[in-house]
Length: 309
Ligand code: MEV
Picture 1 (cartoon, rainbow, N blue to C red):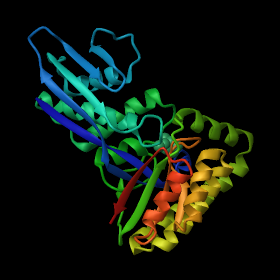
Picture 2 (picture 1 turned 135 degrees about the horizontal axis):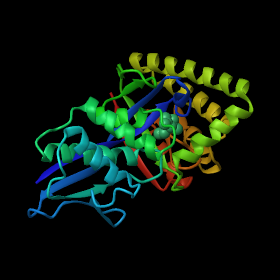
Picture 3 (picture 1 turned 180 degrees about the horizontal axis):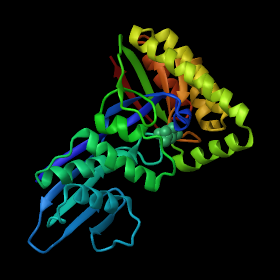
Picture 4 (picture 1 turned 135 degrees about the vertical axis):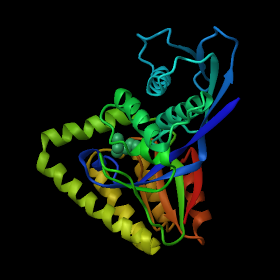
């Protein structure tokens, strides 16, 4: 029996703008994971995937016409490794909430590809894995920048520019983040499409915003490197305002952001596709608990604390 896993991710700066070539910063959330377990089966059984969270059982190879991301992921791995489907069952489980900006789709694909390639004795390296998972992201999520699969496959903080090799991120201090879920599921694809529509309608307006976000991302990279939590917090607030202008915030996200700031968080912003899903706040050691309490009072459905150092 072979098991492999992959983490969730959270975008600290630059979501949406990253689709247009602006840099972005993202970090893995290693406490939330998708896991795939491969068990050998009797000869002739074929390859089956059991997605426990959605209650689906899928046969790989028997339903080429079905556009299913999990089946396609398995097929891509087998094709890349030039091997037929093994007689095995793959069980998938994930504790990453779906459609909430935490990269659940990319994490499940990564865990599946990692476990399957290991089970056939040809474990894929991060770069090959990343290419394959990006292929699935493109087929099923519109026009993704590739940031989700990259931070998830490499499981390290990244400064990411679309189409470029990853640049590791230097973190020169300790940052206390609080990730809060609005409880409102929201798919990334329509949010990305809405920003595209806005761009097509008013190119100059959106390009100005993208430019401002790019400056924030670079300043954030410096603040992270210098361990400057105060500066980082201000940059989060500025990034959230620009995301509001791009129409990807929501009343729930704005309420959680305001609650965190009212409780003296250093910064707060939505994270990921927006219009629901998660926000992220930056606290210091002293007010971490009061910011967490304020987020629950404001209606957060679930909270994860995370230290970056
Ligand atoms: C989604 O996690 C981040 C977005 O920037 C989309 C993308 O980068 O593909 C909204």
